[in-house]
Length: 217
Image (cartoon, rainbow, N blue to C red):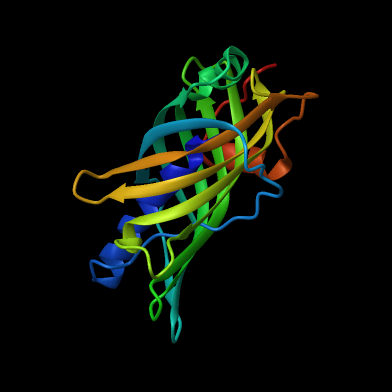
């Protein structure tokens, strides 16, 4: 579940930076994930991403917007001091390939960026795929180096194959490293198993856009 937070950030950050011409545009991905508990297993990881579609940036008087940009990437992470149960639940997601569709807004006056979208995280062994809702926003003005820092939230919406019963949320602190091209994550994740929940229609549409084959349960 943690995966998608970081992916999106790296891609949109580079797009805004190159298009708007300055070194300052920070990336923000805000999304409403519903209730996220303050407790949970600690984790850390890193993510890489690349643009997988053409994009159009619409410039207003103050804000610049990108709609429905697609990205792909890889996530690697690990839980710290996690219970064996949580390790078992998140093990397949510790290394995963993700495909995302994101929309973001940059306020050029305040340098705030917000974004939201969907991410498909496919298990490394191909046995399952989870669909998550992602949101991100950058750090507050008083935070040093805020253009490269932010917070992201994720919620599992459904899945297929081994991920069909996966449930959970996560809250993540994001630090982007422009020089290395990597995005680092630290946060807490709440994982569980519940009734099988298939991919919502919007997630299956995203799967088709990327040409991904369904995973049988």
